[in-house]
Length: 77
Image (cartoon, rainbow, N blue to C red; front, side):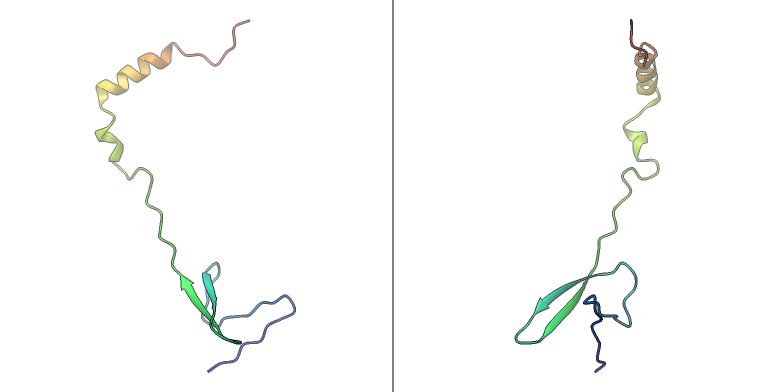
């Protein structure tokens, strides 16, 4: 069993850990700690390629563009 040494800033270097990995630390009894690596779920793409086509048809897009033509960012004086 390898031994690990805590430095002055209370850090321990884990030999097989990769940068930005997250561990849960549980205290089990007197002087015993268990580290469990937490696996982050990869976020899904908000809109996978081609997913918006079922919501936005060509006719609907033309309606949206017609509405936006009347919009302006200028403030009337």
